Image (cartoon, rainbow, N blue to C red; front, side, top):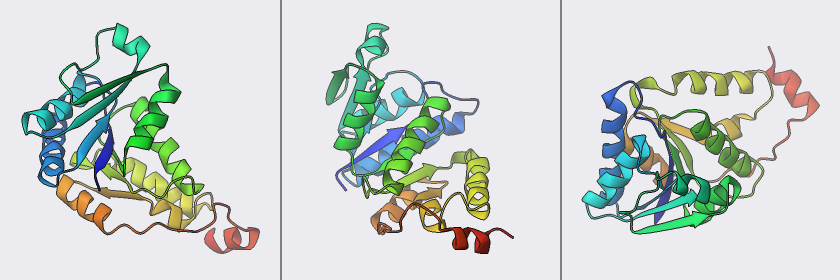
Length: 198
């Protein structure tokens, strides 16, 4: 794995543990010689992970829309910064440049990016690993809801398993190293749904 796309908040969050987790992920990626691909900002957790990757001698590539660059939130100290037309182009380029995807704590934007890339994998448009860095249980509710969608026959168990998770960066990246893509079709058959629903 040469590069990882990291989705995360443009805010710091309510706990210092989130920034500490960002620095931990940065250190683990640099240790494994894995480059960072991210949204190109210099604020919040985005700025923390990019700064730490660069401080440790790693490589960080940012992808930011022109509108956000104009608001002076673009990071000018990266290995490479791509300024693109809009959010759609940003997400497509980030996915193209990355060998896997990690969601750290964040808000609606982080979730939107996470769900889109997970849906792409579910549909067979890519076969790259996806994971939640579940710092201090931030994503516990989402993991529970993921399992609820399986129980209610809206998501296959194989597809739910696409969304790996761990509280620490090293554990999550170890899961990525042993990841094998699933080839299950997206849609549940009517008979299968009846078997799943209690």
